[in-house]
Amino acid sequence: MSVIERNPELHSKTGKTIVEQYGWKIVDQPGSFQMIDKRRLIVDERYQRKITSKDRVFDIARHWSWFALGALSVVPHGDKFSVIDGQHRHMAAMSRADISLLPCLVFLVDSVASEAAAFLRLNANRKPITQAEKFTASVTADDPTASTINAVLGLYGYHISKNTNELHGVRCIGRMQKICKDSPDAFENVFTLCARIANGKGIHESLLAGLHYIYQKTNGEVCNPMFASRLQKLGSEVLVAAADRMATALNAQSPKNWAMGIRDVHNRGLRKNFIQTHAKEVVDIDI
Image (cartoon, rainbow, N blue to C red; front, side):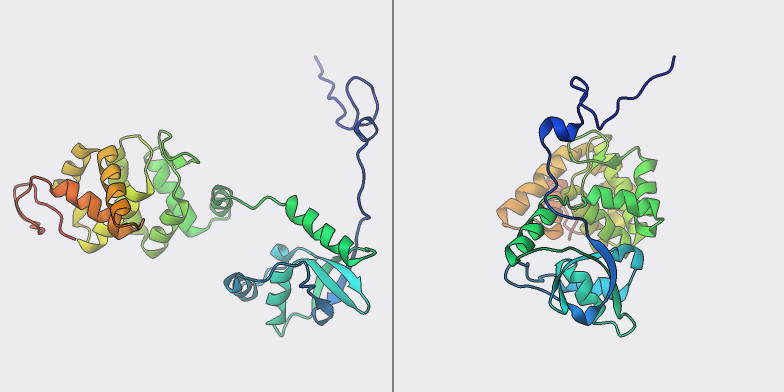
């Protein structure tokens, strides 16, 4: 049996076009494409945002990509063109002697007020890419750090999640990328420990970053069976609660403070405050 798809342009009951049915409007005219000399492009500071991220401009300039550049949105101002969208890209081009012409969509407006209104519409309709979406795209693009993280998560049945409390969920993408970029082996070892401690529960940033801090300070000893066994018995809920309590008490959410919270709950009831890698008994963590 064939299925006839409904025409999305028509209202299902009246048969009118959706435009006619609801009185939708076109608020401006389409632009025309031009390659324009970058020196003819200006920014109207009366309504434009000030550039606050020079690092972003530097990154665009350093790794120039015509594909990522797309087209700037501009409006004519005499013999110049005012940039409505594309300030960072324009500034990046200004620092490169090998770039002279920029692809632009030129829109005709009748006043500065119309320019400002266009600027507001453009930014109101734009949804910033989320960390999860960026991570997924990076995996698809074979980014080595993202691919390593994705592979390690997959080994233990974990996935990127918006909710840290979701079973097998991890939310701290930025933290994982930082750890993995510095040392893929350290990331794999620490995440393996976290996965065993969490036992299917969500992995919190305070647990991952705190254990990574201890991992660095103990030259990886925190992953040996003595420590791992005691940490697993304590469980992720106890360790996360201790890490968060310490960070709150010290008024700073940081890997060191999370690590101190984990250390204290681990050391409770133990007699020594230093690592003995060859001791038979369970030893405590000193960071």
